[in-house]
Length: 153
Length: 153
DNA sequence: AAGAAATAGATTGCACACAATGGAATTCTG
DNA sequence: CAGAATTCCATTGTGTGCAATCTATTTCTT
Image: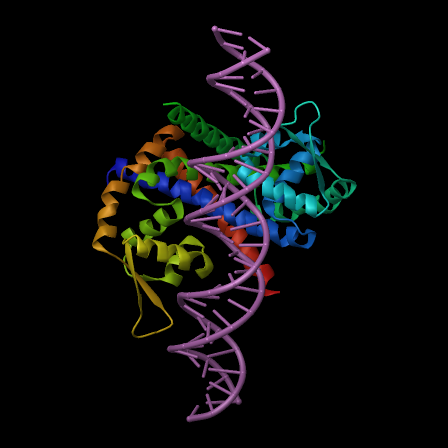
């Protein structure tokens, strides 16, 4: 096998590695999210809101790389569950502002222990994990840049 | 911020990094898979079959970490597109054997260039990519082991 | 200020993922 | 060898992702 074809196979292997580990993480989180009645994407939206409350749908989408087709129904489910409020912005009626309810804020405490449980099985040191986050974010950024380029043409 | 809470945040960051890079890869592949009428999961199934033809649904599921709920409709779509055949195994009628059609085999050539295009934007050396595949596979394996343990109890 | 362009969300349609369940075939066990 | 347990696949229902399209609102241009 030539070096070139090995590299080609590696790209496929890398993509599949991310694809499958992402699902494995999702399953690992589900075990702890199910009792809270949350899915992983819903949990990530709450993580964003716990960090900074009162964001527009677009601001949430920018942070999570998701569009309104995904977020609108997801946010409605979070609203129905009583975790958030959705209100039209008075100054710009195009925007919908998302804010936590008291119940949504209270959920933070219960969710706080989840990454501990999941993190335990990874067997990574602090520095290893940090380096991995950096490297993966770098790849995501390059893929996004490349997609933006080819969308322009 | 204590080291402990940093580590907790890191687990969430790591999970989200994989979650988002996985989608970014999927979008990058989609650009090249769309002309072939394939989705990324369908492409991965074909990759498996190009490597080894005539597998059961379960064997494909074991390699890809997917169950019949996902694979059955996906395989039916690949069958309707003319890429594969689905036939009950004569020796064990519980099993459905998946085999490539001539068209499915022919598709391999057209798909061969895809990882080249995607791999170019990653900016990874051969060794970096290989190490990353190994490390991510290790994490996936640990998550699976942990899930298997907690399922037993 | 009027029309064009851009922006924010919502909606629709399709394709995963996956838990839960069901049915048919096979294997295990006493 | 009969019943129980297991295995394999299919089905159902829920919740994403995302492209494509639509509406309403705002901003830009002339």
